[in-house]
Length: 175
Image 1 (spheres, rainbow, N blue to C red):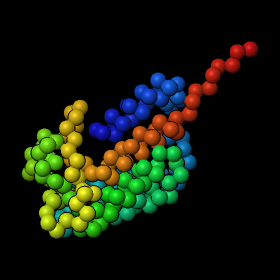
Image 2 (tube, helix red, strand yellow; image 1 turned 120 degrees about the horizontal axis):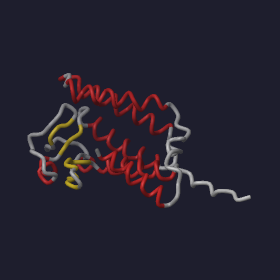
Image 3 (tube, helix red, strand yellow; image 1 turned 30 degrees about the vertical axis):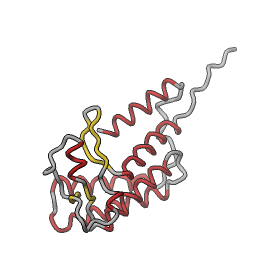
């Protein structure tokens, strides 16, 4: 849902500043097909919950996404996405393939603290890099979830990617 808001805001600002909103993804992404693999793996983990191997699958998904981001570092806006993905990847990899989430952040976001899926784990004393985990509550415009600093970097980078890569409209030539 947040991606729809980001896209809508970026497209609205592009229209206000007379940019061509139909061309923001006409960039030189390398290995674009890689972006679909992590999302498919994450969807599988969330919907199927493969048990003990879910951490491994999630780790592989984050590593593939990190590779995609690193090779596309030069796309405008993508350094933010890359830093966010690397931050999230680090905290997931060092915590057994699961993203730690704060019960307190879930409560502040308006969600039940029992809400959990196979790719998350509740914060505890054994969590490494807890400040990089899902500790920021979001309770705004019908969005209710906990996110990480890495997520905020990814959202910023996606906004900048859509906005900065939308070229200015060419002014009509008058003869």
